[in-house]
Amino acid sequence: MKRILFVLVTGAFLAAATAPSWAKEWQLDMSHSVVKFGVTHIFSTVYGTFSDYEAEIRFDPERLDQSSFDFTVRVKSINTGVGKRDNHLRSADFFDAAAYPVMRFQSAKITHKGGKNYVVTGVMTLKKTAVNMDIPFVFHGIAPSPFNKRQAVAGFDTEFTLDRLAFGVGSGKFYDMGVVGKEVDVTISVEATNGG
Amino acid sequence: MVSGHVLQKIMVAALAVLAAAGIAGAAAIPFFFESQSLYYKFGTDKALLQWGKAAGLVALVLMVYQVLLVSRFSFLEKQVSLKRLFALHKGGGILITLLVVLHPVMILGAEGFVLFPLERRYWPEFLGVFLVFAIPGIAAVSVWRAKLKIAFKPWQALHRIGTPLVTGLAFVHAFYVSETFGFRIPGTGLFLAAAVVLALLARIYIRRLYSRQFKRRQ
Image (cartoon, rainbow over all chains, first blue to last red; front, top):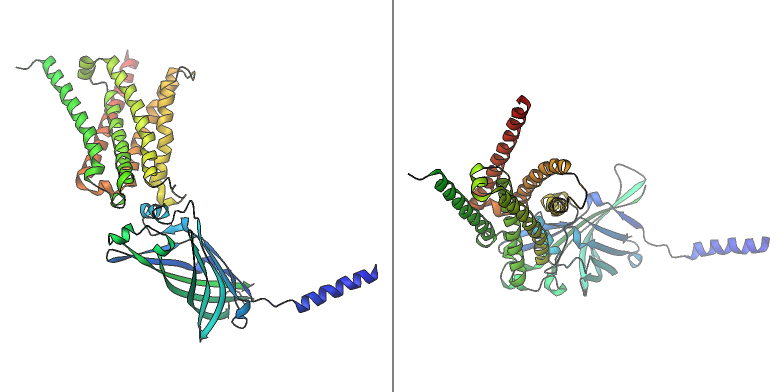
């Protein structure tokens, strides 16, 4: 019995010692993060946000091979400030939120481009379409939280452009009419915490 | 000189013409004063949205007429008869119910039945949802009162509270749910209709108050 126990305990220690040390997992601070977009309407730009999203963030600038981003946005939470327009955007004319409730980005690789600049390569899935994308982002660094010294805070910012028609968000009817642009500028600003 | 009898007939005819014009005017609003939501609809979806809005507006106008029909105007009772006024009120209630049910089905149909999320900003839409249940509820209880074994007095008391309430809420819903009433003509029309309802209700309540006092004195 003692021998079995010894083998089990030793095995557990060895397993722990040889296991890969994963990059830190960060929790999204929803109060200080935003998923924003802008799209042209004839001449002006209509801005909106998605308020319901979640992210699995594993990030360590020293262990990029073990770092990853998995971002899921619930399209139903779209808000451009006009209720009827938002419901139209949820309809089959655009997002078809009932059939495709989420859009998702899953990273495959993160590359350091120098300084605070990185590029995350991964798959963006929106409606039926999955597209490989390189998304540049800025990693602002890690700092102890001014409110809780045991907690670390990390900051990320990204801006990129999506062709909504490539993802089937709209048939192109409104684009052909010169009403709604096809290029959507996406801005994501994330504050994430660890520990505490 | 025009006799009183002829004058009353002219008044009833004028009221009938006005009523028809009111219905036609309400039904025409979504076609002549397009809200922005209509800009983005084409073909069947546009037709559904326009006719769905028209159904709601006609129901609102009919609700105004319901108040007129129960206002106990003596010239109406003499010329049309109380029995016919009652039949019109009952028929009107059934027609309102049909239109009130049709209204959201057509409007949501135009949007592929995408439901509004539970957010505070959609309160006019949710007020509409309440009315979709409340108005047919009131109509059903009125039509099947005897089958439901509801005594006349409690039903009457509830009907006298419920119907002005849903009429008022229907005006609030119509005004806030769409930007249509930001246009001068439909906006003025809506306020005039609301003023007519308020005046008629005030007249009804004042008459009831006087008749109660008169009964007490006797």
